Length: 345
Image 1 (cartoon, helix red, strand yellow):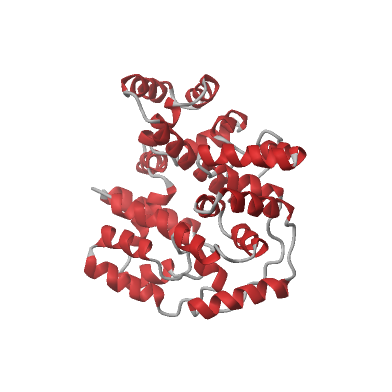
Image 2: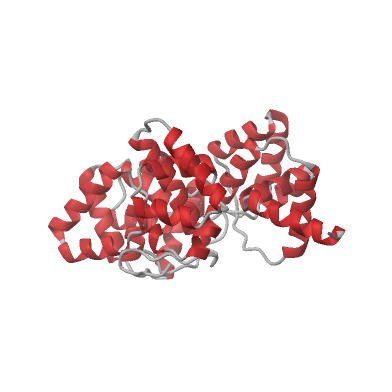
């Protein structure tokens, strides 16, 4: 075997082994603090959180892995979508855990210098309970606009902090909200900027809608989701049916094509997969097993059998982690998801 063929084989093996988020973590940790901070400053809150957690968990990275990641980056480098970054205690704690006090403080200072976060975007960096406190006494329509603007998982947590009656009212308004005048959104953004000393105004005018409501419902705790869905059914059965059709849950993975499942499995750790499958239907397990090598499938089955009882909350958390990865990959065009209503995402 030639040296070139051997190296290509090694690269393919590494590609299967290193999830993309870990590749990003390796790349950032290979750079100096200043360069890493400049990159992080152009990333969104969820991206910074995921990469930071991967950095904190990074251990014993080999020279071959670093070389592979750097080569992959050089080959794939291109335009990236950037978002401004604000300051948040959770991100500060996460980076401190990853890098230690001195390095984290230096890195955070560099990230925050020249930040360009708008008033609404600043909310994305805050703890859900803090955002809930900010909007708790606002008009329900304002609450609905804010909830629609945020990422579905954060929006779900914020709704969980509100009273049942308020939660129902807000969700009904989210489902009915299709667009908002840019001027109205700008005014709301300006009000928040006065509180947070943010940057420029927002431009988006299309937010909300039934699909957004379904996305938010996907990330709610089962107990809250069930009660809220029952309330929506009482008020508008047709709307509730539409939302249910558009929701993508873990069992819907059976509808993802084989190439999509294989791509998804490369991004999911074996520990999370084992816990998630402990509470899944046989159809989902069969789908996963069919898209693994025979040896990998046997090892996964052994792990499932050896795994003791797992709390329902742990299973739900693991399944939500996988759904989050699947949604991210779908948004990047890497896989295609179809919910119960065959809504393509």
